[in-house]
Image (tube, rainbow, N blue to C red; front, top):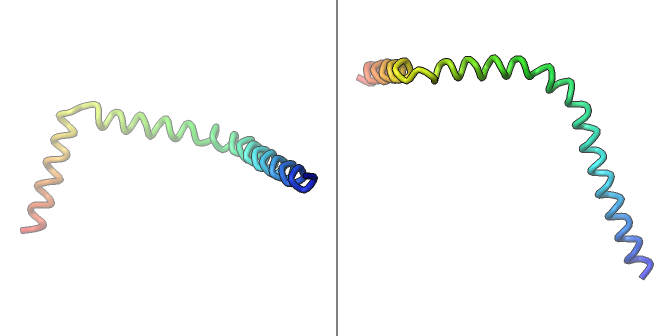
Length: 73
């Protein structure tokens, strides 16, 4: 019985250790996240601007298709 309880306690401690390790890494990554946010926001704006206008998107796709057709011929 004692071995079983000891085993359960060790598993519980290991589980807690894993959770605390994950939490520590999350805390370390917060400054990196804050540093990367402006770049991600700019990339999202560029992406939105490119895909917002359907006409320009279709025009670009058609130009790519023509280029690939010319290369294959």
